[in-house]
Length: 63
Image (cartoon, rainbow, N blue to C red; front, top):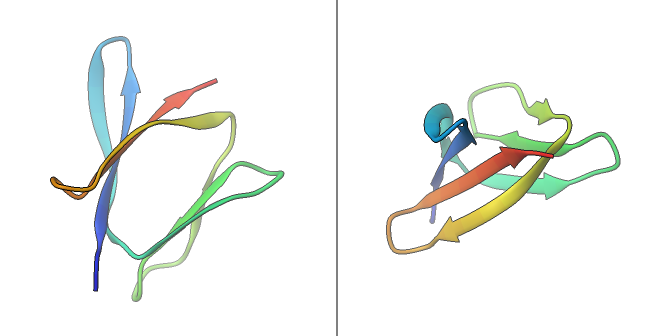
């Protein structure tokens, strides 16, 4: 199983949003992320900046 960490890049800084994410879905409301044991979060007005599969890291940015 591949789980990712999600960070939000803002003003050159990275803020960790969630760890052990097993689902990332782009919806009309925003990017929805969820883990096995936490409630899903929807991050409005964000877009995917990069996905680093080797490090297990998804970087988002505000749009």
